[in-house]
Image 1 (cartoon, one colour):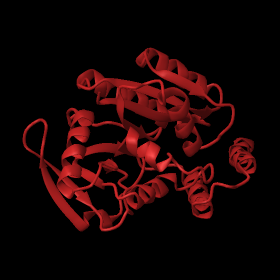
Image 2 (cartoon, helix red, strand yellow):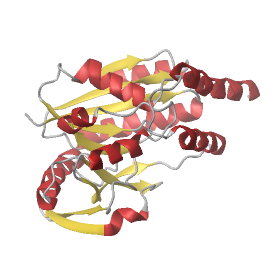
Image 3 (cartoon, rainbow, N blue to C red):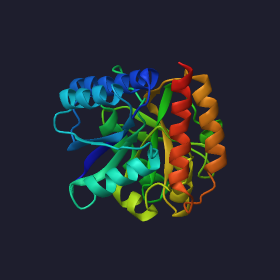
Image 4 (cartoon, rainbow, N blue to C red):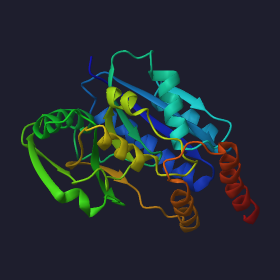
Length: 277
């Protein structure tokens, strides 16, 4: 089977992040209503937040995605831990029809004027990998609004036939770098070959490391320029600055760290923010 599992973290520590997560969920539900996926599709959500925000997110998912799996975590373990755990406990060994994973951050939204994004990504990924002569690794959609792909992704351009007719344009860099996380398609086989995300910290560069690990296995990687999602700009300057500093510090490829201490540090950031309100 060539089923797709959509895995999306929940992140709702305050009203601002709740609103970004809410917009993403509503957007994805509206998109699927407009463009049902032709492949078998399952949705899996899980993550952390604070009340009343995380409860509202859980209720929204139950309303808009009644067949989805939802897991709430008691601590802010971070994206790498959450996605790995959701895959290991929900997908692995339990959803044999799954061939592809569509991973999306909690704020990604979907443009209704771009039809059948999921089917097009899967088809383009297969054609792209065949064209470059590598097993499929990952294919990211382009990003509207807050595009954080690096210009180096445009080192090479290939054109493949589109499953809706016309053509899809895919770019890829010389090296496994520059392709932003936030949303991308990978395969179950690739995920298990690489071992999922490296859990380097709560706010770390797990996407960049996964991309490097994919490249190290000789697999394909690229960006579908004609298949975009919406990556909202970060409008919380203090959080963005703090997150970048944590990412730079912890994105060293190491997983043998005091993760309990890193989780407590991340939660202390939100405690400190609450104290200033």
